[in-house]
Image (cartoon, rainbow, N blue to C red; front, side):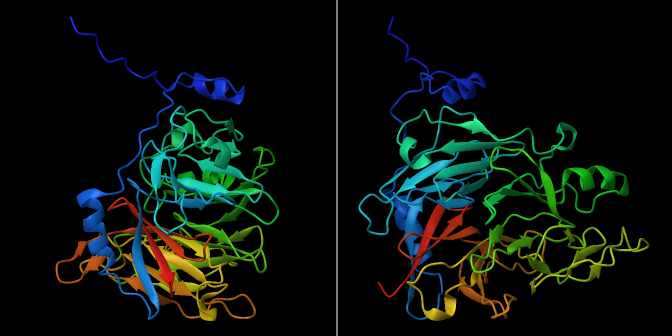
Length: 405
């Protein structure tokens, strides 16, 4: 009788305790990698050639990364850690520095994950991954990522009560603030939540942004009145927090607008659920008095384009116009008669830190003749060489936009 292939050890919750004590788990050392060549790469390069960008820029395939969502770029080696809405996170490495990834492999396969969408990196080399209902921190991620076993520790307790876990709006995002605290956006699960949820959501920061110490202590609600933010970033020039917000569905093709918001300090309310987007009132709360101090968006985007990840351009490889401004991704509409989105936007900032007029920076992932998406951008992050990386969870790719090279 032929010998049966040995199954790899199952990933169990016990692995967290083992890894926290720097013990091996028995996970095979040979981590499978994602093929970066072949017909799939050729088809993706064909898509890249269709993307329109301003003169002097070009779009190329950086990496094939299944289900690629939020990205965090390492400080030194330049590993790009990539989250997904499934059960895997990825480590993407351009080892020879030619602007094309040489290796894509699962990050920390010995750790069981559930919607590890939100990835963010601290300046001192700690990788945080915000999952559906917990946060894990991976110290020295750029060192340990080469092996299946990594140093990892839980950050605080669960993000929301178990009773509020939902399949809807459960992809978290995170950022490290200038105060060295961890910030996490908690989307609420409804299109418009019922009033009986208000007290609990107010307390827990559901439909808002929470902050906590990097060890999970001192949890606070930083901002409220947010429907479902899947993109947050701090302006390095003044420390203010900016975030996108996805607005109420079912109100029509052209309302309410998508949002790019600015929080100038803690305790602000951004209008939801009284406002469905911009100053558009929701039907469900039309007879209820909205907060008198509600903050309206800095920029109103086209309705239902699904504004997701954003970042400040901190590089110097792009022309002066783009330096210090905001790049943001529009995932594309799912419920609009004429589809919109699937593009990268650019928003300049004024001297006082407010937003200028947003404009399209990269488009072409939406075939306007057929209404079919060729790709759906999720996140945008500056790379170490000053180029811009764009993740795409439809094609399972990361695109690289560069200038003049």
